[in-house]
Image 1 (spheres, rainbow, N blue to C red):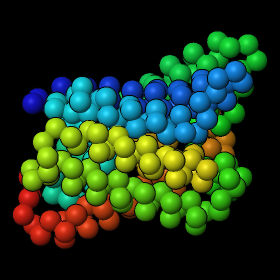
Image 2: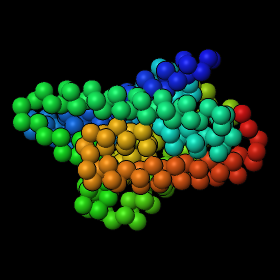
Image 3: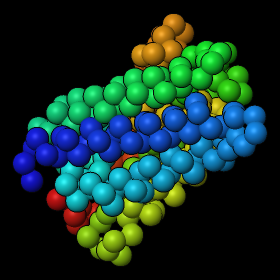
Image 4: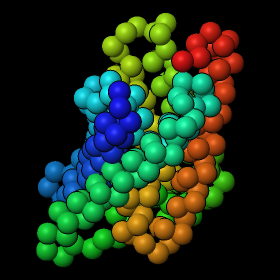
Length: 233
């Protein structure tokens, strides 16, 4: 598949992940009459990945996440030369989604941007968790996310079920970590909202790049060891 089409698929998939997941938090989670709460937000994030993996995963591989792209590269399942274009496309999709979400959210009288579904540690953590706790949470959960992705997309795994496993894994990750970091495991998803929330949210963005990428690389290495080098595509 031509690179431009693959990048378009990555941008659209990351747009949907950011708009659907963060949109569920900004527009629906705290709505007084029928708020969906953090369980609903967790499900929404899982559904965004599941639906777009089926919709465009056959075009681009369905990464929608710079950490996933890097983890797949470490796991010898993605071409290193395509990493930068993929990350740029993912960031473009996430920033565009956050911009559209802000336009919609600001249409409500009395809207205040607040954290705008950004991630954070310390005072910006929903549960006021410290830096180390948040770093470990993001790194460990991203590592396991990569293990699920690499394992479920293996040629030896049951065909056609990978998006379900990946979507459920992302739902579980959110159920665990929304109280800790508001859940990133995805630098693009973190960057889009933080650019508009600004201030301290933008200043803390570094953690939500470093920890997920480190975790993804660890996940890729662990999978290579478990796989025994049998699959290097």
